Length: 165
Image 1 (cartoon, rainbow, N blue to C red):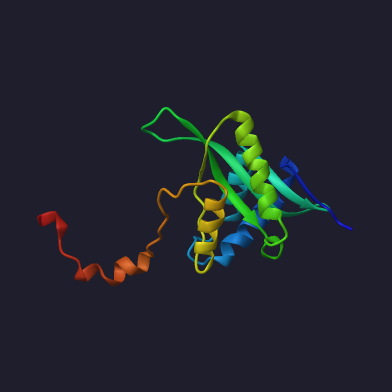
Image 2 (cartoon, rainbow, N blue to C red):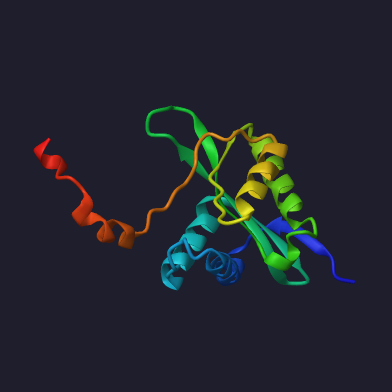
């Protein structure tokens, strides 16, 4: 029987992490298409300077979570920023999400650091995500919105000239 192991990410995991993240972004067409070279650079930098936790199922990565340091430009307080949280679709109801979150919380608690989590989802997953995060003690402080570029081009002629105001 295979066993899910939660462990710290290693440099050798970089390409598998990027593959999993790219699959996640494909689920939501609202996100921009990831560039594999830029994505791999992002993952490698996060492995080097952040804290990456992976869900390993007999050598196969089925999920990951990454924390990096973040400071608002107007405040001296530091946070651990949830850089990404990714669980392959068929492992989402197997406790993988909970195990990754528990490991991230343990790390943040050890460092006595708050977590700032910008988790985005689309469609029916939006409200599930909100409930899951609230159940884990997170407070909702805003939202992420995307306005497509073609929307602005279609309606450009309808807009008033704001420069004359």
